[in-house]
Length: 239
Length: 294
Image (cartoon, rainbow over all chains, first blue to last red; front, side, top):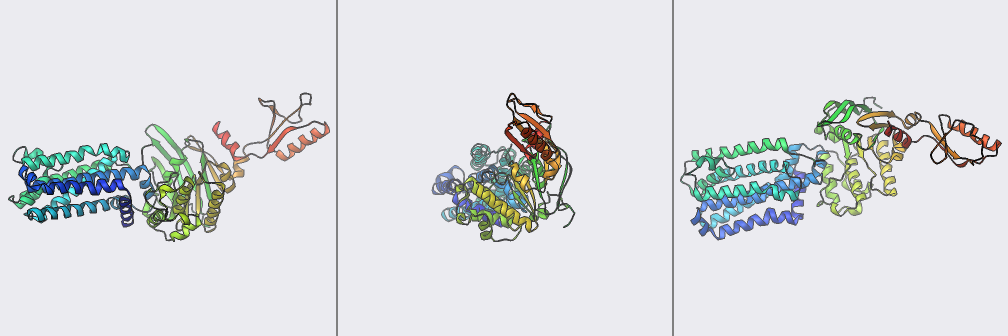
């Protein structure tokens, strides 16, 4: 798995398009949110900034790159090549997705640290970590499922839009309006409960047990995404 | 040499929706032999090969490689090298990085430099795959297949896109691998390669194995051909001959040498010129053509 991950890391740094979309873009968007934090905090709260930054990286860095990478590796038969070896399917997927996952986690950590340095520390760091990890796992699951219906890296520009824009929209909706109204709907939408978890972790004021229950809908999306991926993910291009 | 087959395929069936791609296919490949699986376009040989390699699940029937299911990658793949029909390398990795990665994942041990030297890619070690020619990509593919000298090697159209020198070099390496005990399964459209190299050949047509055997076993099922034309006033030839569309006489025979001798003696005795005389043993191409008309 590590040798696949190393080769994937090399490829990310050699491909300018991937480098820009997975590294530069999310960081640039996050920097704008931090720079304009007073305005965004007035719109929602500091927790809203943390959530939207986290989901920007999750959607445009992790999710989109996952789909694009898997579609590209399938299209040029690299997945088939890897499956011609003794490596198992789980090891292959883990190796391919490990670098972008680590990069995304590092990006989230750095940007959250920068936000904390500018605006003050979050109320519960561990809860924030739990929210981040659940978001990462959900985005990976959704990425695997979306890769199943994506024929090429170019096609990924279209197929990733519903989830990437949808999760950002849900994050903004929940972050700005809260969950006092339509709570069930907001929590069941992908990213809704994770956003509320980030709000609770950063702003404080919510009981811990209530916050931890919010992990359930996110993990539910993981189960749905993995179940979908196991049915529709393809290792070779359609003939 | 062990008599246990390296590959044992029994009543293999593959269907895609309503299409029956492979029908009740059975064959074995023995240790150390070069088995060529040939067929007309759409005969089902790629589907068969991919099933034997473990890339595809059988609809029904059994496939055993080294006595195990080829789907059990961890057990089987370290012992087999696969040269795919299409490249499948990442364009952003170099030649050296590609061989190192795939080599490591095969779980066999070898030196990347040695393997690159064998396929004459040492000078291209630091070149990205995207900058290789088609022939160089085939050699890279071969390099990963032969990495660590596997017991079984699948060569799917190995010489397509290679120049004559590279083809000869590749076959020299295959010969060396066979000397070291490797078993080879080959598919190719170059029938002369199969004719020269294969110990046994399986001929597939419309999803089924129509013929199997050594080259001589396959070719002796069809008559050899003697072709010639005669001047209009010439007497009728001494052997039973059919007239082809262009007026050429065709004698089909299982006794080529004897009939040719008879024909030449008749021509000399009657002072007849045998124009455009051609005679030769049955070739694999002829068996192939006969297959296509079945």
